[in-house]
Structures are given as structure tokens and as C-alpha cells.
Image (tube, rainbow, N blue to C red; front, side):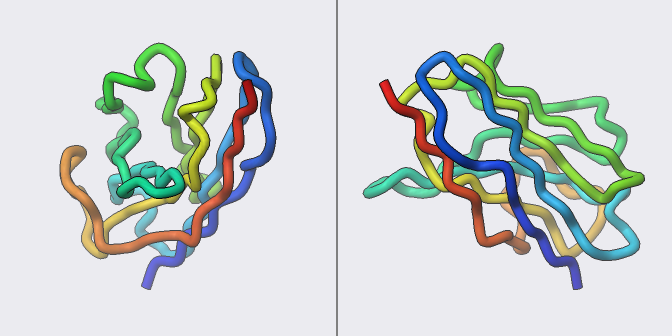
Length: 123
């Protein structure tokens, strides 16, 4: 079964940058759709971005378009979220998400989660 471990969170000033990583176990990483979600204090978990097996169709919510970039390195079993022009409203725990089956939808929630990494953006 796939396990996901996020890293790279921390403190940033508004306008700054952070790069999150999600390392995945398993032999079939290259066939799995990968996603990032986030959950702010007192808020529901929110979809952020997703990327397919070939990195050809990344998808983002409107609030992060032009600021965040999702990418993957299948040789390292890792997906990344480059976050630029950070805003205080980006403050949240960021969670990596995938499916227990290959070739999942870019637009649906998977059933496998990491524990999350905290991102805090100050004004």
C-alpha cells in the first residue's frame, strides 16, 4: 500500500516562496495521479492542485493559478508544490493525496493521504 510523507513547510513572509515535497512509497508511483489539498484552522479541507502520470495536464484552483506550480519526479517517487507570491490566506496544513489505483481522475479526491506539513504566511 502507498504511504505519503510531506515536507518543506515552514514560515514565510507575504510575497515569499516555499517548495513542498511529497515522497511516496510503492512501485506504481508513475501511474498515479497526485494531488495537493490544504486545511486552514476552522476551515474544511480544500483541493489545491493535481497532476497526472505524464505531467501533461496539471490542474489548479483559481485562487492559486499563476502562483503555485505542481510537478513530479517519477524517478524519485516525489511530487512537489512550488508556492510563490504567498499570501496570509495560504496559511494551512498542506496534505498530499493519491489513489489506491492507477490513472485516477484529476478532478476527484483519492483515498490515500499523508499527514501534512504546516505552511504559515505572515503579513
